[in-house]
Length: 424
Ligand code: UDP
Image 1 (tube, rainbow, N blue to C red):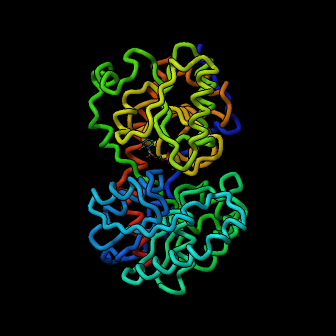
Image 2 (image 1 turned 30 degrees about the vertical axis):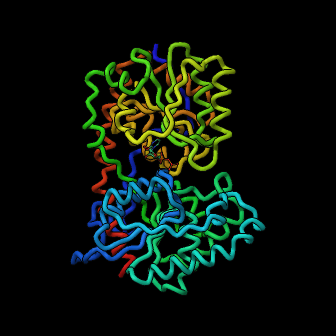
Image 3 (image 1 turned 180 degrees about the horizontal axis):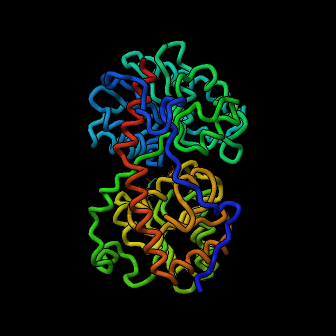
């Protein structure tokens, strides 16, 4: 008998919600924007705080490449993200202040005050760049703070793409207050990456949740179609993965709230399944990465857990898996890896919180489990392992939904319209 997994009240069938139209008052199905003539793409100065490749940076990569003819990207730290942008034809400038880069999301007021002089330098440098552009597009929290604080200097329209759920689980009190006041006073347009992110913004600022249009990240499904997985054994041999094991793949940076430790606990309960962890500790979570290795050894599963590190070729790695698991213990704002797993045509098990429930419909195009529940995750993996027909049915629907609901074309079209509206 197929095991049933009770994730109620979270497991109710959630429709794949359409992003809110850019005109919040437009009827569903109406044209995306109220503009009649198609104005030229404005000159955009994009700002992102990271040199590393997280989800927000992958989303910006496509957009900056799309706008590269008349735009530029300012990064507040150097790293592999710069090379990826430049390879796609984007002009990049790094305006780095090490002391500001070191401020973490939960930093105290004292720590924030210490970096004020360095912040002022960055605010002025960004404002000076912004004067040559029509719109300032802020892609991360620090970019929001530094770009919006400079508004009296640059006087350009400011658009913020909010990629985060703005709650105390993710941010310190000081950061949340700063975001709240900047959004009220210095940001002209906000777009959000999910309804979950929109709700958190509404709770923080008192704004109507529908005021900010939801623009889901687009995922390039063709990159997954191009991977030839007809000979799975050869594919796995090439990646140095066990050729005949049943593989669960967990993709994402190694960080406590991404829940890799929960996946280890779950795998320890299923003797014949291997776990492949693809990702690295990008933002200083090295101690957690070390703890994961110790946990695998302590659980006696080190031979069934494969640490692959950060991989550039996610489509190939995903195609090598039998199931993709997502294990975030806190609400995930969006979760690109989930849509990528769907685009790869693999069944996806994900934790039912935040933006995930806007992507995955339990039992239809994926499987939802309670966050931080290793037993539930183990049962879900067992269920899909034991029932290949169910796994295939979910994967087929997922593959179709990824292509129809989360295309790059749709993402770029909506984002371009948002930028044009902001520029007017
Ligand atoms: N990713 C990658 N290589 C890795 C691990 C992850 O390129 O080794 C990519 C992954 O394909 C996804 C992004 O990093 O596009 C992570 O985005 P997500 O929204 O899942 O998480 P975030 O980083 O925003 O928390």
